[in-house]
Each structure stands twice: as C-alpha cells, then as structure tokens.
Image (cartoon, rainbow, N blue to C red; front, side, top):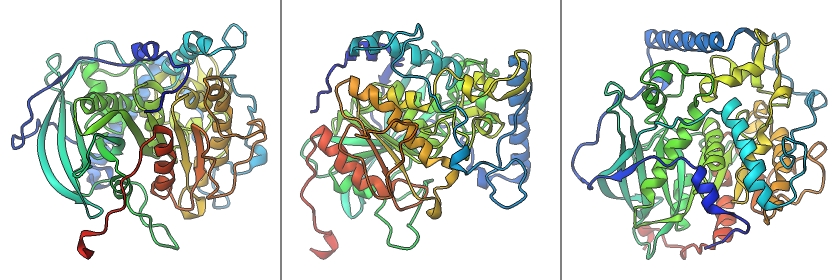
Length: 502
C-alpha cells in the first residue's frame, strides 16, 4: 500500500460527506427498489423533449430571477463554417484574455503558503469554499442516509475472463418526501479467480451488468484496431470495476432538478443559488457507492479509483477533489467544468455552461459570471475567485491522470486540450508542496505547450497523456493501469490464455 506524505487524513475525512450508511441483507433473487428512470434523451418523443425543455427553461429563468440577472452573454457556437454567428475562438493567439490564474498557493490575505500544514489548514479550505459557493454548489446538511443491498449475483465473463458481477442498489431514505424516490444503481464486477481483494475503478455510466450494454463514450478508433473496452483491460490487469448510474442519482438536465437527490433534499422545490448541481450530486453518489465498496470483501477499499469521460470526466474530477477516500482518478476529455480553465477563450466557454444546456451541472451562483445585465452589473470569467487548476490541485497528493484524445478523431477542439494542459501544469506546485511529483514541466503554465500526441508525462503522481483516439479514454486505459499499478504497488496477474484456445 502506498502511503502519501504530509496528508492529515483525519482532517480531510472530516470535511467529506458521510451521511448515514446502512447495508440491508443481500437478496440474490428479490427485486430491486424501483424508481422512475429517465429515458436517454435520444429516445424521448417530441412531446416529452418539448416538455423537458420547457421545464428546463422555466428553472433556468427562476435562477436568473433569484440572482437579479436580466440577460446572460450567449454561449459560443462550435460550428467552424464561415459566417457562423458568435463563433467559438480557435486561435491560440486570442485564447488568453485573462492570462494570470489565481495562485493556488497564495492565501486570500495575500500571504504565500510555505508548508503543507498551511495548505491543509488554511489555503485548501479557502479554495473549497470558493468552489462550493460560486461554482459547483454545496451538499446540503440534510442529505438522508443510504441503505444498500445486493439484488443479483451472477457468474459472467469480461474479455473472456471469469468474473463475479453483483447488481447493488442503494435506497436513499425518502421518508421526508415519499413522492421522490432515489435508488442508486451499481454494477460491481471483480475477477472470479482473485486470491485477495482487488483495486477497483468506479466508472460513471449506466450501472449495467456485463453483457447488458449501456451508454459509453467512444468506440473503435478510426483508422486502426480498437483497444479492448476499458472493462476488459481492467479485469485482465487484476482490477475490478464498478459501473455507477448517474441517472439513478440525478437526471442530466435542468428539468430534473426538482427530482433526484437534489429534488429530494429540496422537497421538490427549485434550487437556491448556492445549492449543488449535477456534478456535485454525481460525486456525492459516487462517495455513497464507495461506502458500499468498503463492505465488499472482494474489493481493496483503500485502492478505489474514479473515472469518467466528457461530462462524466468533469464529475470524476469533482469527485476526486471533494471525496478524499478515492485513491486515484482518470479524467477523460473533461473540457469546461473539468480541466479546461474558465479564463480561456477557446472553444467552449463559461457562457456555454451558464446557458440552459449546461447550467444544471453547476451551482446557481455560477451564472453570475456570464451576466451581461443584472442588479450587480456585469461579470466575466476573470472575476471567478478560482479556476480549474485549483480543482486539480484539490486532488493532490493523490494520483491524478488527465487524459484527452485527438480532435481529428472526434475529441473536438471545443474541449481546449492546450488550456487543460496549462491548468495541469499550474496545479503542479501544490503536488510538489505535498511531497509528490508533478508533470515535471519546467515552463510556466502561461507558456507551457502540451507534448505531442502519444507522449505521456507519467513519471509523477500528476500525469498527462493525449492519446491518438477520439472522445474516449479507453485508448489511455493501459497507460493509466500501468501508471496506477506502480503508484499503488499492485502487481497484475500473469496473462491467462483465452479459454477458447486451451
């Protein structure tokens, strides 16, 4: 087991969200608790899509009214066709209107942080407070407890290797508002032939069991053979994995904010400006899933990681930053709201996240920084008290891997790969202060240029690699596994021949 230096773990753990946890007896054949599940947006009929959009618009307008905002600056258009109105910028020479990011190691009183103790006791709480108040929202104090039970256990194969798969449901106590049901759905999959508890990677997705399919980002790489699915790679390396259903925690739209865990804690009412958004809600759900994993004898609960791609990459980074019990993170193609700096004018912008299509991920207060007209005037990304490099820094000193793909393979310029690299470099001083290695980049973040594709910076606890695939991270999974194995001292099992060829 790797012991990271300078971590006052009790201090961190006291700040984590730990509502009541109970485990019900396992029931291999009893039905799972049921709750209404939203259809995937592409499966909704025109009338339902229109209804959801209307509810979203109403909720968005309610938040603007609470904040005194009369008009927001519109988000940018990613279409690169000539003549596109309000077109996103893709010129690096124009990408840094606010080149100086907040210093992660300077206290709000202007004094520099010189020791790890000052980071843990003074500076880190300041950054956490700013993110909670202005960016991702606060987890309410009245979040009810979760009771877990195994509803199904099956023998299966993943990548031709035998596994044990458990469907696990976490029922959130909804006695305060019985009309809103929240049942967190997990699929926990571990190697059947493991001789000891295994490290596990929790993956944001659909909570589906092996062979059931489910939603995911990225398939076969264009122009060449695909890497095996991430699940296959993990099992082959002697890891387990967990698929956690985000929709079972909180719907991915503004219409659902009066339902799910956010709606349950608000008893079906609209949010207040400091209330949590979906990213924080999904992170809370992942932390509750970790509560369950700590009771599973097949899982090495001290080495559970978190992973996600795209909007789930944003959620994975938020989870790692705010839940100290996760040991490692793989942040895939996260873009704005994830590793991309808000202060960058390149591709997706803060204004896009503040619009009705993305505001539900964030705290209501986040909309203030896209305000064009309001009772408090106009604010911009340059007025934010924090930025993405500090979200990455909140993960320190735990191993943090930032992953992107190639724009020409579908990992669009919209995500701002270069800006995300700059933010990763800017987080480095915090990792170094806490006694671990950063990317090893000598340049200042303002001038640092990301390395060529397929050139990983993987020597430290802070890691970066742009792979040659698209909007996915399976093309980086083998590099992530090797990097994580080294840091947590996990030895993969010897390769096993395909049973079909024995």
